Length: 98
Image (cartoon, rainbow, N blue to C red; front, side):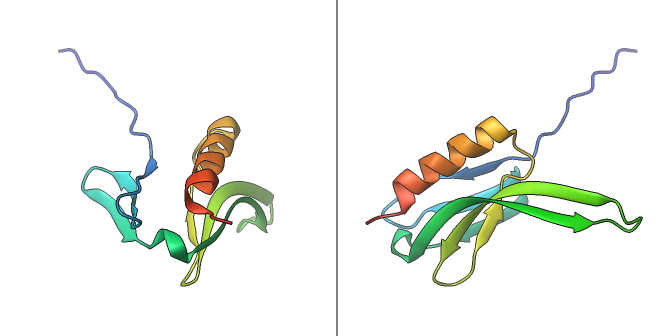
C-alpha cells in the first residue's frame, strides 16, 4: 500500500467587497469568518507578544492585529516573518484610510 501525507497549513485570507471584507481563518469549513466595515478599521500592525509557558520557559510569538472600533482581529501567527510583513502591509494599504 502507498500512503501519502499532506501537511495542512493554517491560513488567513481576506478580501474587500463593497467596504465589508469577509475575514476568514482556518481551512475549508473548519474555521471562522468575521465581517467588519473598512470604515471601522483604525490601524493594522504586527504585534510581538511574550509569555511564559507552564514550565516557566519564556516564549514569543508575532501576529497581525487589525484594530477596529469594535474589537481587534488577530491572525497570522503561523506565517513566516516575511509573509507576515507582506500581509500586514497589504492589509494596511487597503484598509487604513487617512
